[in-house]
Image (cartoon, rainbow, N blue to C red):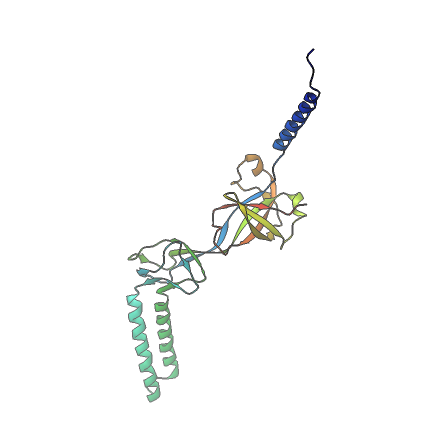
Length: 246
């Protein structure tokens, strides 16, 4: 008579239990992370005077310091006017000493000298703050006019992203709270962030959220700032944010 192995039923039960546990684990929803797009504080640098571009001193992607020259304009007419105004002011002071001009007339000459000298200074375009040249819009030899954009400068030492959180989660959040940022392409590295703003009014989830059902939810915008000393986080990147556990 064929003997039944008493261990077979036990092994079968263990196998089925293991498979059931695996199926349960695989079907559990993963951790929810809030996604946002990295942005940086950007400064649009424009010309203050009309002139021809003499030289462009920086390239796109280059890091610059505050006050560093970015571009020089030829400004021949302004330089001639400044030179003439300086000579007129010098002569005016001499005439003041001899009594041929009064102080009011000399002050007017001084104002003309200072104004023309300022226009010459404006022919050198400098960086208003430290950052990176994100875009350069012009080429040497082009004619520019006042207000015409020349560069887009971004401060990448600190970047930010907005995430959109549903109302029940807001009670757990506070300005100054630390959160964790993750890049999908760098899953082993995290970026500490700080909540700096929680908007007071609800809004519909922005259109760049993938699914239509998600876009119809009322949520609150939350601004997260990330220190970025190594420059890893760049504008346009998607960052995922892990909120504190309840």
